[in-house]
Length: 270
Image (cartoon, rainbow, N blue to C red; front, top):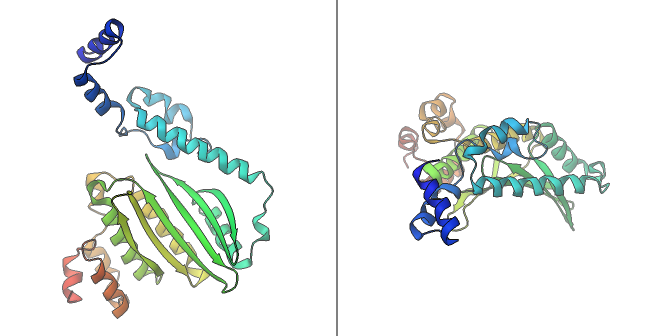
């Protein structure tokens, strides 16, 4: 044990309490998430070996990691219990059923519930990430036969990752002809990133789910990894300028704080 640990144990043994100075240091050690723990692989049902994902790094685990693990394990249990209730996705309308089948095929997350809010049907998935989580909601209008997908991520905007995700969401949506229903936003007060798409063409669902999985990966990146997420030359080489119409131009201009690709903005005169 180091000097801090010895002093901490002596304080607890002799006085039954911790000094203010040591309490602050203890909080700084226990409450931030550790760098080695990933709840997506340690939780129940992940398919990974728990000993490798948790026990082998137990000396580095913090209270924040434990809270996150408890939270995601509870969600996994709730998802399993709901799966035993006998509600068959086969009973869903064809347009909605095909969406849920694609989500299962891509292993997008754990099904958390199906809510009937006539004329709407809402299906929710939980997406465990590194030390936080996300939600994917499918909303289907039974009268209009239209669907939308909303993605919410919860977490702090470390190294501007939420702005980078917003830029990636917009640029990839333009490249893949995906219809954005709601511009990507980040609510710093509630630490929530949100974006929504209209599902106008079922053939584009695989591309949309692939983008969602890519955005999920970005939430786990650290400093150096973020630099390659939105690469100016890559998007110009993909021919994104040919895909941008006046609507998309206004969309990019509207979130110019989040998208800062100098050459692209220069060519678009924004």
